[in-house]
Length: 222
Image (cartoon, rainbow, N blue to C red; front, side):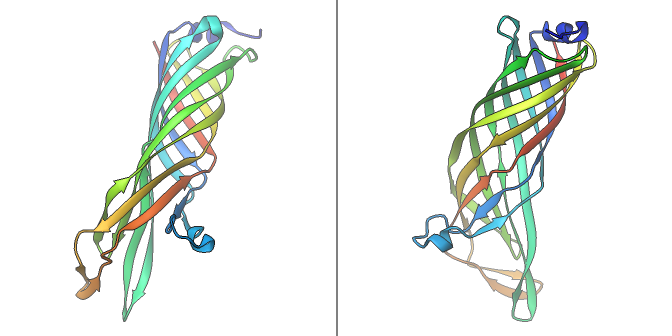
């Protein structure tokens, strides 16, 4: 094994906490997930280049060269578009908020230098979330939502700074899906002096966060 003293020292710590930032390449918001027509059912609004934050707690199991991690993220993404209505344009903001919670097992690859440790692994996750929908300043609040579940695979690298601190970066592949039903709480609203009629129907949607995930963070070992 090509393991230096600094890496071994960091691994002797029983636990670590990592605060990390995340970049997700793409996601989709499907407007009509329950429509009987396949073409209509497949229509979606792309929401790409998503930045988010999270935290992970890992437990080190040196005898098995493995770690067990529990992470929670906060993901929020929306886009603002202008919808023409008579002689004015009405702002429409559509997006989602999600809270991926994942349990991951990591296998430490016995290859590296004095400061480098590589790993790979996989696990399971639950994905609660809601759609955020705002039209002409009026919010369509979520009245129902589902919690998705799935698996993920991950690989990464860790650069050990000293016994207490290290830098971690991972590449993760997962398929986050959940559904949300929104509804306006009033029939009309006013935007810049113009009366705007709001839909009285429920607005079902499905959110699919399926892009590649890159994380970068700093870990504290104890």
